[in-house]
Image 1: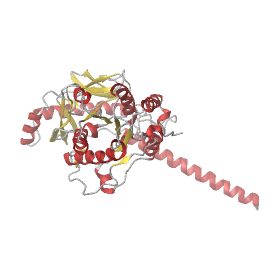
Image 2 (image 1 turned 30 degrees about the vertical axis):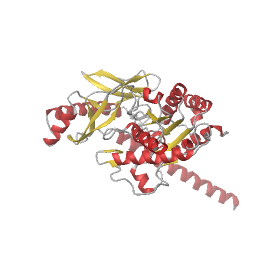
Image 3 (image 1 turned 135 degrees about the vertical axis):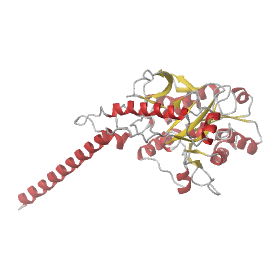
Image 4 (image 1 turned 90 degrees about the horizontal axis):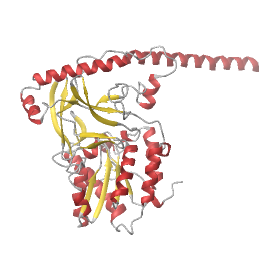
Length: 418
């Protein structure tokens, strides 16, 4: 009887495994077929800029060209629908208004590192600019906040740039301010390249490969005609003109180029799982067609460059303030929507610096800014949201790091995370 029961249970387990394996195979094959679908012409939704306002930086991916600004026109379903100045750089190539000379003469010195949410500019300011105003008003001292944010940066690149700049500039406070999607981003590089007779703004997971679409993608389309005045006049015409039509054709050609890579998906390969890569790494093609490369680590110590940067920052004995920048949905819900991997990486960073992330979506008093973002055109923060970020960070800066002055402040790096 016992042997019979054992065989029955074994058959049930084996049958379950077979059903699971068959289901996984069907799901994998269905996903591979989906990846090979052609790009449809109706998907003419993209951004275009008149020029690339960043340049290649071997150490840190990109750097802003001094005294430049980024005007972006948004095209949806083949028509111009909106445009904005997304970022500005000052004469020192920083994404804010404060210069290095102003920093040198200030009484309180702060460096901010983040992604596009931090260098994002609306009505002439980024939130670090507004943070400087808030701190000066509350402290009644000369404050300088240097904005070292770069669009699409992940935490790894934020840490590496912070370690370099902190060593050189010796600030009173370092602010590292990611959004939830930043934690798992790996390193990337940007470069302007000439391809098919057009200048292209390429982002690549390999610093020496910008023409291979297995590794590189277009950040935005480039066309010198796509200026602010052109955007405004095209909007008055209903969103269509000959320039838009030529851009639509070019975008379709680029889509077909990517489509050719999709068709190289190996339908019957047993050495890799496109579905698993999509679920775990948000990267269905391996090294191909990644808008942003991803890392699989769960602790920043597992990345040699990030680990070295952490050691440099700890040795500098400068307070590091970790700030979690929430999106509109997180502010409304008053909770974060980080992935499990992002949470593990956030906790690893907290252990390293002995400090919890300041979660701006919790603990604030008052109404949620309206509008908070720029949807339906863009998910980046509105001018009221930039003010919200600045006020929340200023309040927590004062409470945690600046009230007592640098000499008496409790430095989070004194706590041994091990």
